[in-house]
Image (tube, rainbow, N blue to C red; front, side, top):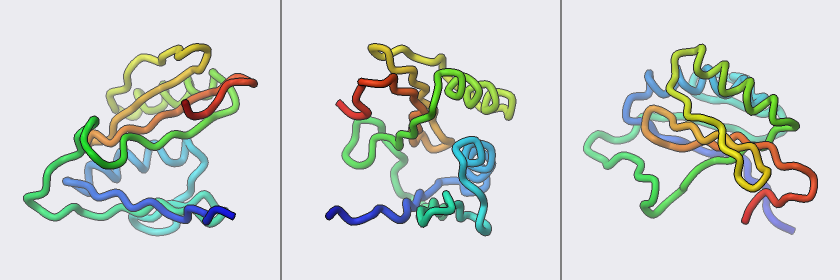
Length: 128
């Protein structure tokens, strides 16, 4: 049996800027704030945010390490709604993509960490 993933810790170059972003995004994904810098899905999974050490390098998309975090939603309309709400909150959001029938939105946090919000039609795979 595979172990359950229970948390992700993201380090930010400017914690205040990142928290403004995640305070807008995470409720749209069904997470609730447990306390400052900690969010939960209510089922044992947590995001926690901390400041990165000064002098460290920023996230690089094709560099070694995590590429993106992916979340699936029940419909293409939910992808559109999240895009609209993040834009209304003042964040830059790209256009929604159609990837072989998958409706996908790839957004970046203030440090360039990518979040994917996608709808997978029945019969399509979450990962390729």
